[in-house]
Amino acid sequence: MTIFSVFFISVTVSIILIPILMRYAVELGMVDEPGERKVHQNAIPRCGGIGLAIGAVIAVLLFLPKDHALFSLVSGSAIILIFGFLDDRLELNYKWKFFGQFLATGFVIYGGIKIVFLPFLGFEPAPWFLTIPLTVIFTIGVTNAVNLSDGLDGLAAGIMLLTLLAIAFMAYESLDVGVIIFALAVVGGIVGFLWFNTHPAIVFMGDTGSQFIGFIVVFLTLYLTQDVNPAYNPALPLLLVGLPILDTLTVMIRRIRSGRSPFSPDKTHIHHRLLELDFTHAEAVGAIYLLHSIFLIAALYFRYSSDVVVVGVYLIISLGILALFYVAKKNNWSLHTTQEGADRRGRSIWRNEYIFQYSRIFISVSIGFYLLLTGGLLIDEILALPAGVYALSVLGMLLFFMAPRFIQNLWIRFSVYNAAILSLIMKDEFPQLSVLDNGLLDGFLFILIIVVSIAIRTTRKSKFILTTQDLLIILFTLFSSFIVGSQLIGSVLFRLFSLGYAIEYLIHRDFYKSQLLRFIAAFSGFIVFSLVWLHLH
Image (cartoon, rainbow, N blue to C red; front, side, top):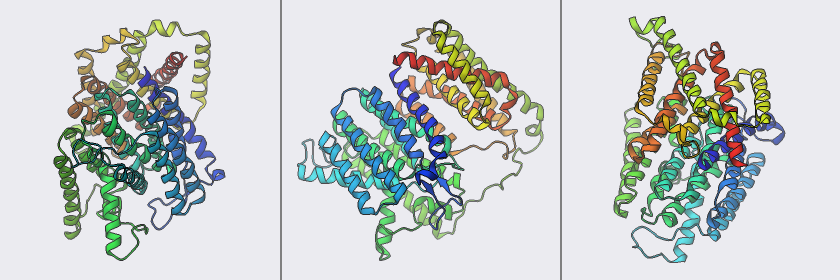
């Protein structure tokens, strides 16, 4: 229940705060105007990082066990947030940025998180006059690398989300609850943020968010490999934050070779180069997710390997990526895609409207059935809820139906995802949910995936678009199922993936026709919220 509550609270706070912050972005002075090096064409609020960070920090403070080192990371991240906010508002000189990062890094090092063991130097701790400077350089370098990589909608948030999930998996393997809580709290904040930031974004995270997640990720990788499980290779952080490091180093080297300052602005980052190859915005982000996933797969697979293997794998992957870009540029290669709005359904059977209609009905009934089944299994707990909870739920439903369609769909997504997670991982608190652990349910959800695929195939592209957020779900599922090897995690994510795709499809099509399903989905969110609230008290 604790892990679910961490994620639930972080997502909830970020989703509530971000629209409020967007409303007052102008008053806060946090609006990102278009520019020569910017991809967007209109002014967009850049206050999403504040909501992301506050959601994560609140969840951490509520649930993090007493751990001096990790609480020092909370203090350090607070400093990062303050300087990031000032930077987004006042556009600080780079010297002040570095000062804030140096101060925050010093707090965390003093708290005990730092490099102790170095690759190729054996199993004895390295001298402090080597490890302390290296910790500072690596932390500030990676923090800024993540910040610089945040050039497209969902880019930095997405790759750091994948890294945090890998960290959470390895912390789970190492039985360290503190790192799991910290990682999943930030994951929750990012998930809430991505609902507003998936292309086309309506809010940016700004330096506040990108520096915050970069700073936390780098220290969690160090803590995981240096303290939690020293059996992990000490060079593993190279792979866990592989692509931002590669991107920043190549850009700086290119600038130095051209006689410019390594910190001078330009449009030579990996995402810029993909756009030059005629990738669309979403395709470029998706390609970067896949490239970064190669590093993460290597990190998970070679986490116990020797220094030579880990460093060698990092170099091989990096050189392979650079070689691909070199060949593509030399041959003037470009990616050609189907024109927007073109009918991609092909002929004959895929244009049959009855197939689409029956598929939509099956998807709607399937989601409603799953939610009602979960509610039926928890009927005793639901009936035992205080009367005040029901009164607040009724009030919440009235506000739900009065809210704009965008807010309604957001709450429905939130409700279905969290109801699915609760029903899949809360079997210790609610033993009756163990009934769901059977092959019949998985078979049913497998059929659901097939039907969703058929429905997508019979839908024009202009009506349903797979987003980069969908790709994150797929990668998340693949990592857990095929790499980590945890039966629990694989089962949870397979079911979450199935239900998530189904609900996304309906929301993108004509979910408004299924008023009963909308009611069931929305009400399930209030029930989940009530159960979590009672657990906390």
